[in-house]
Length: 116
Length: 113
Image 1 (cartoon, chains in turn cyan, orange):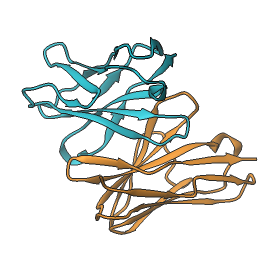
Image 2: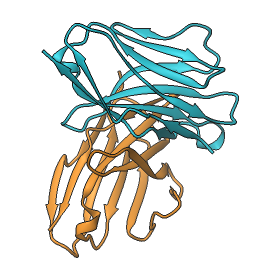
Image 3: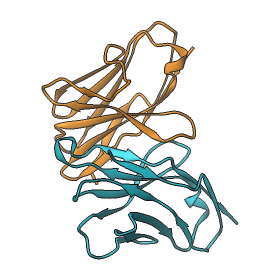
Image 4: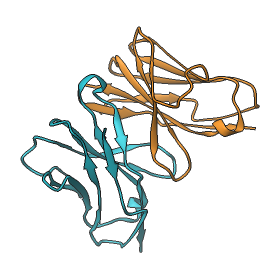
């Protein structure tokens, strides 16, 4: 069974500061993918960043970077230079393999609030 | 990136009626789509996997007779909430798989009164 855990229900950060959102996972599949999504109050799911289990380097996308520590089974999201528009719910998710390829298992989510 | 369109974005219906939600992949063919349900301030929970041309695969605890899924073409999957009750009020969101990526629709906020 796959499991994703986000232990931070809420996080606060000052504008222009960096913030790390935690995510740990558990799977027996050797091949998997890890995603981070942003969900603003409108409800849409905005893809932020992806890390494959065999990727040697940590993924980066603009202000987003993923701190992938495979041995510790963690995939933390780092947002640099926070902006007010970053305030939203953030979900870590894992893609399963095999016949259910593409199915995502989501963590509980972290509500990020950016203060001016 | 790929576009997935979900319609309607909001719907209010009377208890006992049925509601159909559509999920379309606009610029790619999706043999597999997924339907999720999300309660306020909670995570997305997978309801079912929709496969083009075959029966949907439902997650444990999801009533297949209540949540009817049809994936009749490579670009359209529909979720019908039958005999809706107030406890079915929730945010429903679909995603479509293209290679290794999953693209989400905008979601549908269902309110049953």
